[in-house]
Image 1 (cartoon, rainbow, N blue to C red):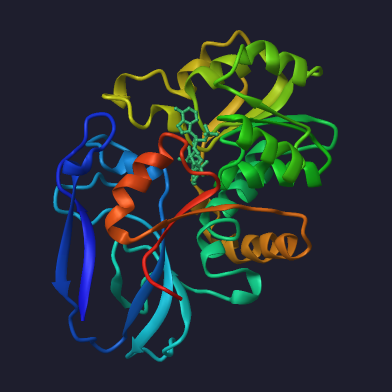
Image 2 (spheres, rainbow, N blue to C red):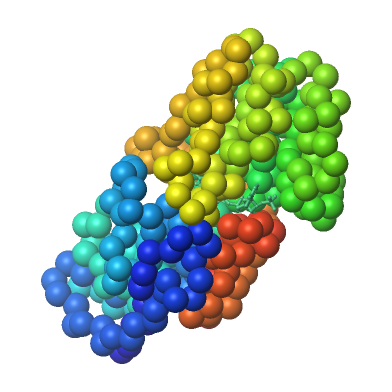
Amino acid sequence: MQNTKIVMARRPVGEPDDSCFSTVHEEVPELEEGQILIKVIWLSLDPYMRGRMNDVKSYAKPLQPGDVMPGESAGVVLQSRSARFVPGDHVTIHQGWQSVIVSDDTDPRLMKVDLANGTLSAHLGVVGMPGRTAYFGLQELGKPQAGETLVVAAASGAVGSVVGQMAKLLGLHVVGIAGGADKCRYVKEELGFDECLDYREGNLASALAAACPRGIDIYFENVGGDVTRAVGPLLNKGARVPICGYVSNYNDDDISKSALPFQILKDLPEVPEHRFFLVSEWFERWPEATRQLGQWVKEGRLKYRESVGEGLEKAPEYFRGLLRGRNFGKQLVKVADE
Ligand SMILES: NC(=O)c1ccc[n+]([C@@H]2O[C@H](COP(=O)([O-])OP(=O)(O)OC[C@H]3O[C@@H](n4cnc5c(N)ncnc54)[C@H](OP(=O)(O)O)[C@@H]3O)[C@@H](O)[C@H]2O)c1
């Protein structure tokens, strides 16, 4: 059996073009005791992958040329020499852009999927890593209170859509920010946010001021840059800013020289409570989040969209699209049929 994998061929400066990736085909080795063989069906594309391509100090080791692109995928066990898995089991695993994965059954990032909580692909999105990020980031760092005002950008995306809908369930006034009229309409009409503003149109600062008459109590930071600059002056005393990411900076030529949200927030006359967080801080509680998110989906209280790209070889193209906002909902690549 052949595995296809996509490796980082060279480090990008700015947007990663095709020369930054190469496709490698290799023979899949025989299983050893305690291993399983997984056929990948879905690959998740996530903004953080761009950061891993830089040679800068971060929470994770930078990729080296020749390393497989990182990422989580969902698939089905084809063969097992493990007592814990049988062929047919559905799993998620974090072993990068590959079509077939051989894994030790002790890999901490190999997880059995319970389809009662959602579809296989949803385990990479709304009930998976991005959903959990919203769940913990909002509750633990946002500390939401009914009646408060929350603003979140990339509002139609995997994380932002869950943040805003959860905040609505908790009784907050919720304002989304998204790129383009279609995304804004979806966020307001389908997801039920109170308002959604198109940051590419008109004056975001004045539109935000009008949409947030009582100021902003929680700004869930997904994008950074000009959006953070527009939000900053409207933050109330005691505001909280969970810093989840800053996707507008990820393709900067040299991110170490960029004005990141930490800097923009520290320059405000009243500095809000803020810190960067990783979803893995609550690793022990992931099953709780998946169950709760899955329950809300089943009850129709949490909606989601997926942007499905076809074919592992095209992952670089979809990845570039994600960092330009071409995705509409969770970006997935369909690697094989279920
Ligand atoms: N800390 C953690 O543990 C953790 C875990 C998961 C994700 N994250 C972070 O959460 C954020 C959202 O990730 P996601 O997976 O949910 O992705 P996503 O929102 O589904 O997709 C990325 C979105 O970012 C927006 N975007 C891209 N370039 C932009 C720019 N220059 N300015 C403003 N917006 C831009 C686009 O939406 P628009 O078209 O609406 O602009 C795009 O659709 C990212 O910052 C990511 O790094 C953090």
